[in-house]
Length: 288
Image (cartoon, rainbow, N blue to C red; front, side, top):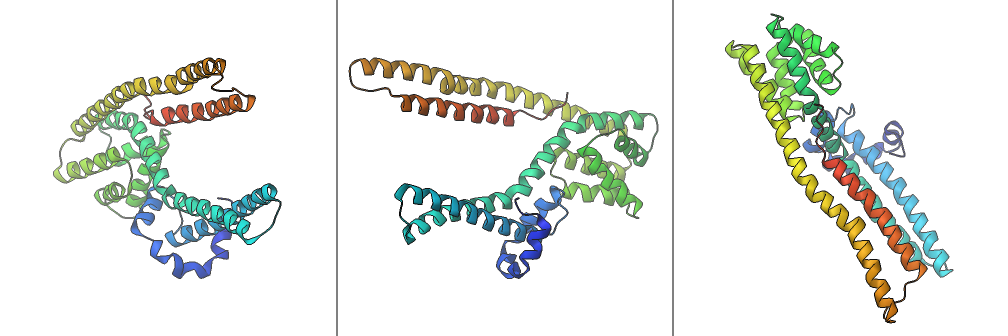
């Protein structure tokens, strides 16, 4: 955001009534899962103020662009320029609205990638007759990033007077990680039933390992298709396309100009990073 949350909140206190309908459970849940320590209404005010900034920025930019082309200043130029600015600012506001959900999803993926080692660590300690509370403390001190943050909340809740079952339940309801939810609920059921934690952890580790292998296998299959798409769009299509244009130009049906080649090169420079970025985004976050 161009404008910090604190400054935006101070500048938009009168927008509460306008933005209150957008302060939904979806937004507040996403903020909690993304660990944004901010109220939903304050976040909406910050998003709204930043969207207005983008409106002024893009509106002015496109207005100047249209003015430079037509060399005339009229209301229609302002309407077109700020109309495009309004569309882009609305798009930015929509992105700001779903941004906590995106961050929460990324955090969930990182937790899933770290959970395998954390559970192995915890299992070793349980085998050594270490109680669950101390095992969780030791896992936190082992340097796990996002998993450590989740487990730290369990310890904080226990130290504040809640039972281990209540602390685990709170994490299970809040976390975005599907496997962290499963681990939490399984530990809750095991503590209630008094069953063996060692067998439970071993079962969860095997299940998580199977899940990792499945993700790797699916990504391998998907990578073959994505590689074919990349080679087609970034190598084969431009090469064959330029060759065909050269052949057609020899018959006088098409003239290959420097501008046309510049457009093709520019399109290739745009397409390749997009495809590579998409392939990279599809890669599972697994640290094995």
